[in-house]
Length: 86
Image 1 (cartoon, rainbow, N blue to C red):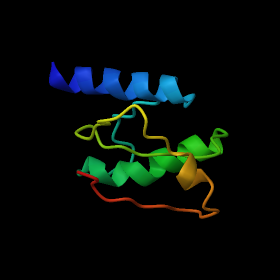
Image 2 (tube, rainbow, N blue to C red):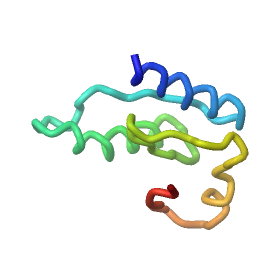
Image 3 (tube, helix red, strand yellow):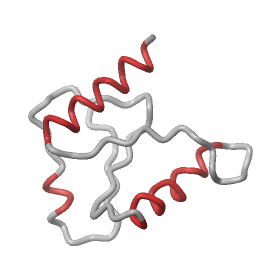
């Protein structure tokens, strides 16, 4: 289906750029809205040793393999937020 194809695309892009891919679907926030699981998931990845965490929703995609996230890692910020680039 389309969602699995999108996950494959995200995983391929991460492999191309040397990033570890984690598809996190479990609602771990203890609330009815799974949106609240984003921050606990990010915290969990950081606690497991991730230096940086880049979150993409399931309905987002890369339209160019040339895009890299190194610029965000070099900003020296704790959080960086970006909007849609379409």
